[in-house]
Image (cartoon, rainbow, N blue to C red; front, side, top):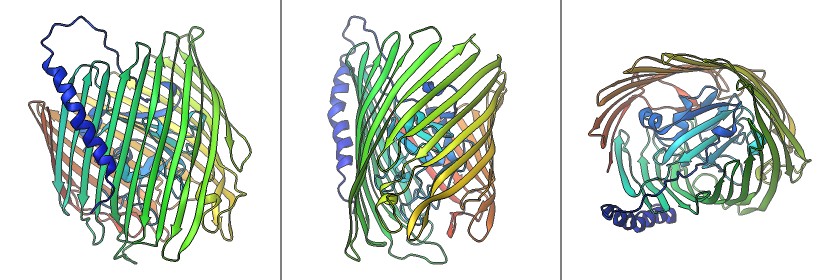
Amino acid sequence: MMKNQYFVLLAAIGICFLSPLALRTALAQEVELPEVVVYDFPDSSIAGREATSSITIIDRDEIEQSGASDVYELISGRVPGVFVDQRGIFNYGIGPGSSGSVSIRGLGGTPNDQVLVLIDGQPTKMGIFGHPIPDAYPLQDVERVEVLRGSHSLHYGDLAMGGVINIITRSLRTEDGISTRLLAGGGEYHSYQAGIQQSGKVDDFSYSASILRRETEGHRPNSAFRGWNANLKAGYHISKNWQMVFNGWGEDFSVEDPGPVFAPHTEDTRDVIRAGGGVTVYNTFDSTRGAFTAYGQKGKHDFTGYDGWKSHDRTLGLTGYQSFETIADNVMEIGGDIQDSGGDGENVDIEKDFGRFYDTQGGIYLDDQHIFWDLLTVQAGVRLQMVEHADTQWLPRFGARYQLTGSTVLHSQISRGYRSPTIRDLYLFPPSSLDLDPEEAWSSELGIRQSFGSFLSIDLTGYYIDAENLIVYMPPQAENTGGLVNKGIELSSVITPCDWFEMLISYTYLDQNHRIEGLAPNVLNWINRVIWREYSLQSTTSLVDDLHFSDRNEDYCVTDLKLSYTLNETAIFTFKINNIFDEDYEMVEGYPMPGRWVWGEVSVTF
């Protein structure tokens, strides 16, 4: 039985309370009213502020077509340079033995603290260990996903050393009314999910809320997952120039870790309860615009079924920016943030209290973007980062984009990223140390984007990363002794020979001077999609070469097949065969992935 499902009640109350208001407005639509001006609510997109960066944007249409169940599954097959390991159905897990470690251009960290994950522009992480929570990002309430590759600490500060993943929740309605979407699906291994998502608008107030339940017994003994996810988003138009948006989220899940096949676990259950949210005030004027956010999140982790670990963590923060167009073709942005995070942990098996610790850090930055002759965009900026237990950090970035022809764009960038030592690094368990410096990485890239009408588009990028001061656990204490050089090539392409067929291809080549377990030098993903009338047929294939484990390297090729049918633009029926060729493979050493298994679902919108 799941406990403390207060976030489910929050979303349920939001739906039940707000639905009558929206319905009342819908019933009153026949009344003739004076014409009003409709203003869109801004969202937390970061794409417009990253003119020279390598960025992949996955919109709601592609999310619907993908057949993926969560953000990590979505990006791992569509974004070059990104690799995410898995170990089963729904269940990424948490703590030792877990999967869901995302690496971008070979940087990810163990735990996964070299990539920053944002929800609506707000950092989301476990306050003690600094890593994101992979099982917290289902796709039901996601409008768009933006992935920045390479170091981006200028705007986003800590943890953005390898890259940034920005998860944007559902857009708020701009017209009065109400819309509801029901989702139900199920498959083998007693797996199912069911959810409801609703959005509505009344005058200047708009909202979106959702609840999702997921369960599976898993394809291995003792690999079950049971969890709730909930989201609530509300916006209010203060005036033509000012808008306020609130977002809240939560998850309550229990995962079982079956352990590696050579040392299986029998009673390893890990319970996680997390919730967070924030308030953002947007302003939009003719020559200036900005956003200011206050956010917070809390978590409770109980691993007493595994090793006796229990912890509470929380993060509080403020972030904001303001951009100015003071002269023609120039945008200057000033921003900053401050964050306080930490928590307490104990081991109840040995009655050991590790104490309560918090760490505060923040920074300010200046970023300028100028367009010359309508062809050349130059972007340059610097961030001053202040960190407890470390010297002040200067984090510059320089980038350029040149429109060579109407269909050819050249782009380049060099930037410095960093990761501050976490609470775990500084205080908890041997070999923690207060003498640790932040990890840092210089990241550079050069690329070309080429389109051939609507038939073919290609984006080819080469990159070079020099990381140093990497924290290595060397008893009796941790030290900044690690260094790493990653270089590689990323290729993404969309081929559309006709209006009923398209192919999406992404390829990553990664060369590391020191190979890291769980990464492969060659990864190829391609998607074939046929759309005919109300039907859509899609195959998704992942080819991984030389995935590195401690005692071997592994190759595999996995293909999924998905068939969808849309009825009257209100109902979508989906049938999916995962791993259709029954490939035997692992992505986490000792955790074999499921063989062939089937899944079906239906969604109805009204």
